[in-house]
Image (cartoon, rainbow, N blue to C red; front, side, top):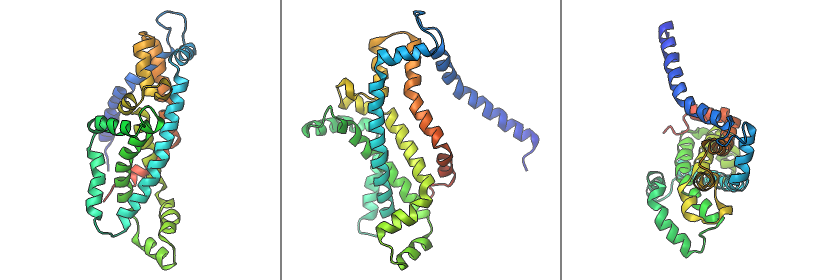
Length: 266
């Protein structure tokens, strides 16, 4: 039983850490809604000015398209790969799985330059695929590890019962195992979405066209080329961060449930 003093101490520690986390966010929000450096705009007018000057509409559309493609493809491939590694027995399974793990251990900075030359040889530089496909590959590595651990921890009796009833491998996966795995899948989707949305290096290297810039990359160009004022820059930062916050809040309950269920427990 936790004593009253211990409970108060825990709350005090949480409040201190929450204050450290919220202070930068409140500072950005205060600056974004405050009067601009030129005094011409304030409040929501700062967001309208930043949206128009920074062309964030184009950048957000690109980020939404890239993030949606990466999340859908990565989650589907991760479910199938995780199911194979978690429930099936085949030759070379361990070696192949460790090759997948290299994608987790290898940072994108280490493969960005050789990947650029490979995509240039294929004629994919400055295209949508040059931004999306590398992030699919990086996300599938973690997603396979995540879903494999979940399927390994799932009930073997359910799988065996489905096989006895004559269910095929595909039906066992999509109709028996996937519905209970929804919290783990949603958690994976949220993580992949946040990583993809915030990715900066790959779009910076792979595209030169302004129409293919993602929101974080557009924010960097907005800071360097369009304005040096902190108010409009803060407004642009809020615009770029808002979709991630909305996406997380919309799926927050499933995300937390997936973490609490120990989806990566071996």
